[in-house]
Image (cartoon, rainbow, N blue to C red; front, side, top):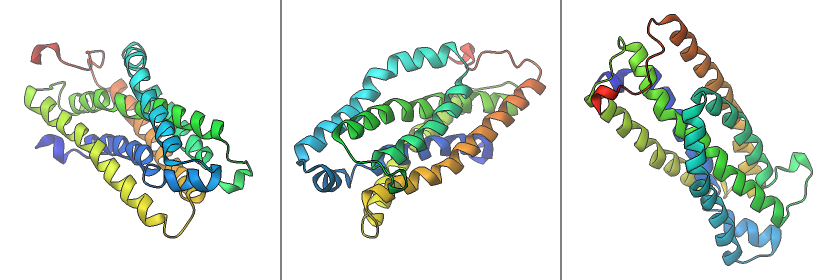
Length: 220
């Protein structure tokens, strides 16, 4: 129950869900947008989304290595500021006065497939560390299992919110404004992630024994 009652754990989990909102938001309305803006069929849309998801598959191993080797907080902050900018380029948002091209859509989807997981993957390690920092350095098997379950639930939560919201907004605004507007709103999440990581690192500096590994090897 400590995990569910700890707002610091839940705030980290929410960032993962927020990233998934952006990863799934464009899926329901991508095909009509491609047909209208590019004159391409659903087959081309499927190919574009294949690039989107393939980027996740191909980038996962090197991304895991980088996160393990360097500071996971850096990747969360870096990706959180880059993701909204990419999402504003997906349409792109009309205020940029840029034309929609096949290359632009493909490249942006590929980059989203890399940087959205960069915002999500380190969250599990951060959730483990936050729990340990706030509970005397302890991380029991029960706590770690609960944290993993909360982390995993963030992915379908973000998918549900993103897909449903996209469907509703498609009734009132075009794809370019919907995705670009969501990118602008996500800037608030970017600022939140920066403050959150700053506060956790500050807590880490003040906590004795902060150089313990993120995962307690005794529980595995």
